[in-house]
Amino acid sequence: MNIETTITRAWQRKAAWLWLLLPVSWLYALLMVLRRQAYKVGVFSSYRAPIPVMVIGNITVGGSGKTPLIIALVRHLQQQGIKVGVISRGYGGDSSQMPALVNTESVPNVVGDEPCLIVNTTGTSMAVSPNRQQAIAILLEAYPDLQLIIADDGLQHYALQRDIEWVVVDAARGFGNKQLLPTGFLREPISRLKDANVIYHHKPDASSIYNKSDHNTLLTEHLTMHLQPDDLELLWSSNNQMDNLAVVAMAPEKGSQVHAVSGIGYPQRFFDTLNALGFEVIPHPYPDHYDFSLDELLQYTDHPIIVTSKDAVKIRTSIMQAIINQALSDEYKELVSRLWVLPVTAVLSDSCYESLQQQLQTLDIDISMRKQ
Image (cartoon, rainbow, N blue to C red; front, top):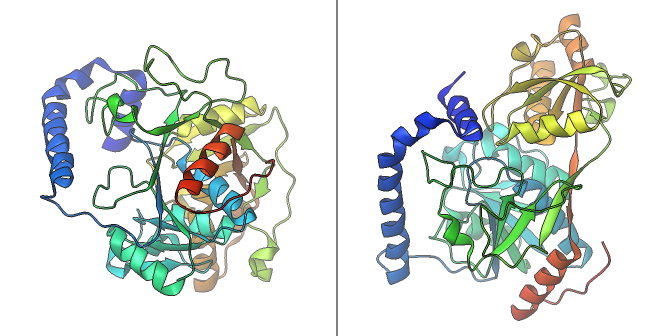
């Protein structure tokens, strides 16, 4: 178990030893305040894009449902005829090859797993770079008619000015011990939410969308979303244009044992979802953006393996590279026949779309509402 997994589990348990790191959190808080103030007074310069920018982010480390939210927003805007593009830092990709445009042929080790997932799912225009200004420049050069740019995970990137800011809060996780990194998993203090558009990600059957003891000053609880699991899909099938590895298999039945392999920010949500669907889950959590190898997955025998859509992007690339380099052995073919993906769809409340409409109208972007 590496240090990232260790500290993530400690945050989840609110382990007492984390308080030993409090002096480091105080230093982090000081540096954070000084940095933000430097942007405010102009010591550090910030970039204003030539078209409106909408930032989607969170104040916590780990998964909050941000990527499915971005996919849902892009699809909605596309349905309304809005020309929208997305930028990302391309975490997990090769920064030496950035800025770069993302397309359906892009691979995770170059542009990152989440950009690949977003583009493969929506077909949107997208660019990646740690320097968001460079990402916007290359994106607009290729797609000059864009009307709106969505910045993935740019909440703390104050070098980029923004017109709209949405913050995703995972109501199930809450804010832990409410401390900043590394004592807690907050990137910024809870007070950062005061003037933000907060989207509460909760379970579909949750009676309360957030823990009022964590934060009882927000009046935006009507802005909510939840993740709706879709049907299981084979990770690899003949429509991947690799006819020499056509896979046919029966989906695992409810009540059966499955290996749940996850390299996302908050894997417990994935495990809980599979449990709720009736599977007997054998959990295998990995660090966020983990780069799985086929050899590593071979250890999970006897039962089907279910992964997230984000992890599936990288695993498909590994399978394709293995096929290109050499014919797969029977052992690997058997593994591929047991690999399944659980896609999820972000379902937003009507109030989210109404808020989006109002915000875009103030930016002179006309969007007509349709029932989702």
